[in-house]
Amino acid sequence: MNEFPPKKSSVRTITGSSGNLSVIESLNDISFEIKRIFYISNMPKESERGFHAHKHTKQFLICLKGSCEVYLELRGKSETIILKENTEGIFIQNEWHIMKNFSEDCILLVLANSHYDEKDYIRNYEEFLKYSNEK
Ligand code: T46
Image (cartoon, rainbow, N blue to C red; front, side, top):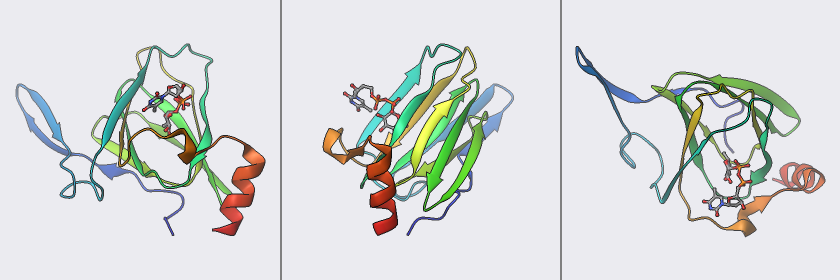
């Protein structure tokens, strides 16, 4: 059973006078093998995304630029986490999640352990409550 709410994890970062280099290696820095990388950008200020949970997919979210909030809900508990440093991220797994309050320059990077499969999504909230209570 995954920990809730997830704690922020630091991204290994090499700093220097010419800038930072942050690195994530599958299995060394992250507990899963990365099969997919995507990023979300150009979000209008008032927009909200997500409104779903995953059955099996594990993901690591990093706000590469700007900031956003991630609302998470699992087993009757909820928490909103602010992402604004590109040297930290959060693992999410089975939580109902909503991404919102995007800054104008926000770029949200997501590393996932699976290929895209719509069958892994629960997009209906009532179905999520049923699924999450049964887990
Ligand atoms: C998640 C959060 C953090 C694809 O065709 N391939 C992909 O790999 C993804 C991720 C999405 N899509 C299609 C499916 C939809 O037609 O892109 C469209 C937008 O996807 P969605 O509405 O699910 O996007 P978000 O921003 O609400 O959620 C995304 C991920 O889908 C999801 O896995 O957990 O970011």
